[in-house]
Image (cartoon, rainbow, N blue to C red; front, side):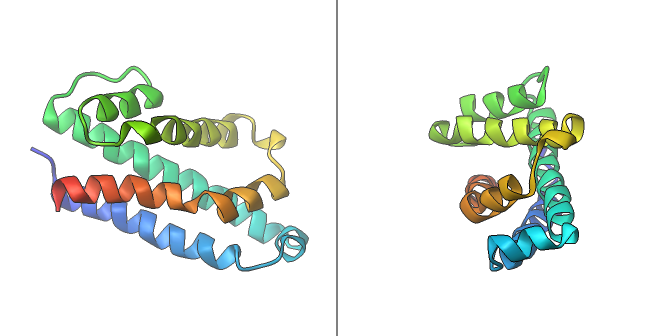
Length: 138
């Protein structure tokens, strides 16, 4: 059985992170790039947010007995297949995981303007993920 408190905790982390990232996207791109703390903190908060998504997915899969994902991408695929996440968002959620992998392994290839673009254009993807999970369990 899924531990709803664990899901709530991870969703709460996502909500706090989105609020923080939303405050950063209120800046102009020039102001965002001018202070490395903006870029560095946004990058880390995006990474943590994707990690929270992965933790939720893996928890649901394990507790619901949905299989054994071989990768983070596989975890998303399983939740889409089982109807926990909308199929039309699978590519988006998998792209978020690819971004997380780039942050972890190829961090020197990500620039400030890319991070700014992501927080300006893609924060709603986290909300879509949370909405699907919350709808299922709460």
